[in-house]
Length: 143
Image 1 (cartoon, rainbow, N blue to C red):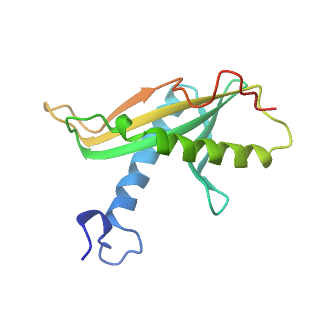
Image 2: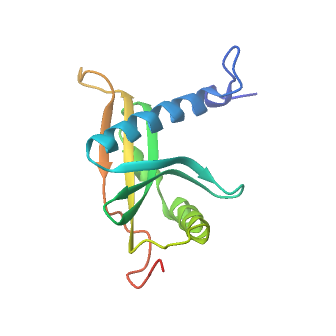
């Protein structure tokens, strides 16, 4: 039996969860562009590892994990980025760096939380940006 998140919508190959996630990533990318953060890749994958958004802010490579919720809950979506998820993102970053000819001077990890139906009568989706989330040891150097 499929859960709500795994049901295929009529006439589509995407699950409801994938559609919610894709819309959240689009909203997050637009939000970041407005903050002058240049998103250059969405859903980067090497077949085993995936990174939601990759962007540049100046000379800093910004790796962004997007967490989308249909409604605001008691626990913030950013709490879903636990130790296990951070380890998966770290592996993805290592593999992405291998594809680059010129390594960035610095890497930053951000989380963008998108709530599509906020509480308290707020209009439209709510986007929250959490910057400089610890991901690597303080001794990590991308080059």
